[in-house]
Image (cartoon, rainbow, N blue to C red; front, side, top):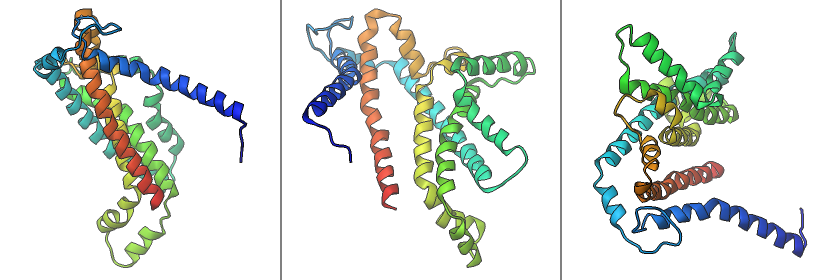
Length: 269
């Protein structure tokens, strides 16, 4: 076991403290400025007020942007959970020609720059589908998000399946259980935590995506990241963005808490 002397502990503590300051002081400034009475975010805050919170609570564009982000995120997550899980089962349980190529193609979208993915989908929608009379509209944005969200579910479920022994499933079927019953009572409980964690990561990735959304969002449709990007160009409404950012910071604690509980549950199994 590595033991540090007093000087090394102090130096390490100072380094950790500096890193944490760089991480969390900007977040604290955002939260404090959400109560800034001024139109422009500044430090120190001269007067505190909740007027920006009141404006945000009654803002129709913010409500629409939040709803769009939730709908797109949930749609992309459903696609990712379905295709990511099926892909993970296929690649972990079966051997077939081109298996490594399929694995690469599944993982590739998360490695591509967002601008490349966005341009590719934009060209497909506008140059191929639209002339053919197929208007993807809102659903096209969900599909675009789903392509890179699949990787989140695939990686989590695939890693979990590789650690699972097929003996329990075989024993279940030998005892007379059907495929569906075996999956529901034996297989799924074993990778449930990875499945849920992958879904949370997929939703978070979609909810935060801005580059692909710029290229695929229908005219007049804003997700929350797009709304923030557009509003930041208007300095007089900067503190309104701080309010939304503060809410997102607080809501981000929920998936972090759930992920930690799932990790602890998996360690206890």
